[in-house]
Image (cartoon, rainbow, N blue to C red; front, side, top):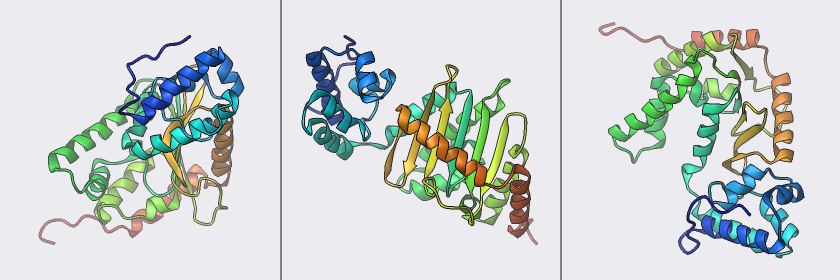
Length: 283
């Protein structure tokens, strides 16, 4: 049986208690991770992450575990405790996968995705959203996000495909000058050898991706993990096969209903004309 990769503390952490109980129930049932993976239709990697406290047990895994072990609502109850202590560190695993991905697809309804943000845009976002942080702490957040963008400049970068909701382009962040710089930075990446940007216009049909963010990360072994946030989702890297397949299809539908890259570039250029250019001092 696979043992936890770190010492869990079920007294002080609900997530650790969940992992310990999953390990205990699996041992009692005499199941390997491979066998449990087949039963609950979650990958062995994901189950191991939950068991070792590295991943959150997002629904519907708790219901499936209770059914598999015959434990009533034990794991569903534990999930309630995990959810209450959940912290914003949930995006960390997604960043680890992003660094190894060979293909990155993302839909963002209302904000320009982090990999596409200019320094001024991200600084304005952090300043508005992290009001309790000092200027030095904001500098650190900006530096971290800029560091992520090194992936764009690799000799062999991943294949990128972004779909931006029209609201992401029209929502003014940091003022007109910041938005002008941000829109200008998008244009060179609309259609290149390694990148595609499409805009999903306001008049596109509604779908499951109407709000929030979806990121699909395909690794060298051709497996895909998704990060979903918004619309009642807490935000977590998920590789459960049924869920990934469902959202890959939603992404493809959104892609089909979005403007073409050429039409997207035209819309961005039109919006640039509505942004006031930076004024020179003394004018």
